Picture 1 (cartoon, helix red, strand yellow):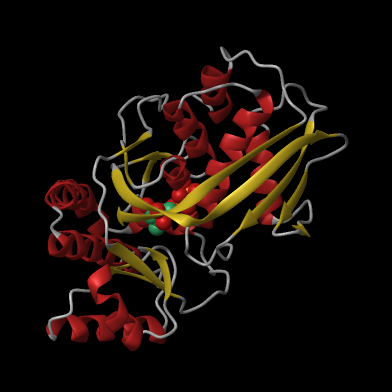
Picture 2 (picture 1 turned 135 degrees about the vertical axis):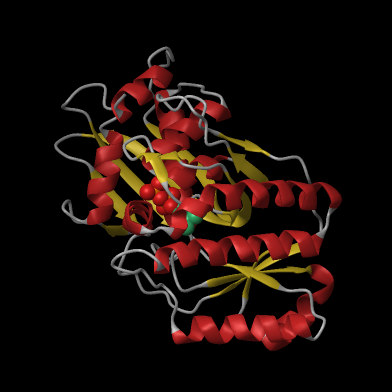
Length: 327
Ligand code: DP6
């Protein structure tokens, strides 16, 4: 099945009268158990399920309307050249939804996170775009279908359709219709996530390329699906019982295991910078001294710390540059 056929399967039956402009917001999500490795590259079907936490304050607002001639993409007010990576990726995604070859789109997206700095901006970006297209075409799709459409743009976008804890089911079907995200029950007042920006620079190797290289070349990756299965079980239990240490320990170990598979790839992928290691050691030192703080990382050098609100002022003293993203 192609991505176009998959999109058609969902939008084909939806009858709506397009509006002049569609608009939507989608939050960033940070995986506590990572999506790392695809079983189908065209449909962004994952090897394993994954679990994330959405950061309601950080995200992308996207507006889309029709235009003639060619697609036009503005990111944070700056027009992207037509042959830029981002414009081409967005146009390729829009190809899935063009009613005919002469329909083009004007897309404007404003993000509260730096693009491609390892803060999952593609997740909120493609989720907001899928939601904005639903608004533009007046499809009135359910969130499960919208999660599948977002996934076709970027895998992790499947989870950015929701707030709170979110589980993306890997699914087993070849057409991917059972590979969508759903919210996980569990409000957790007082749970905080703090961002330590080690670098805002665009990364040299995209997560898409790093992920493929890992699947193709890392022997360690063979152990990944079993690791995910046990981490997901622990995370779900941690959320249910509000067991912060279990949540933090599991998320940190999952992120480190993902980075270990990248480092084991050929050629190796290492996103860490010297400051990344310094901050990790600092977190471990504080924890050894009794402060419950853990971290997770995505495909980049930046660190997302997990801690409880009662410890926030102490954490801030140790990390004065930290941006609190959830509390
Ligand atoms: C490390 O969703 O960006 O952030 O499906 O190729 O667009 P594509 O990949 P993407 O990968 C995200 C990887 C990750 C882990 C995660 O968010 O689960």
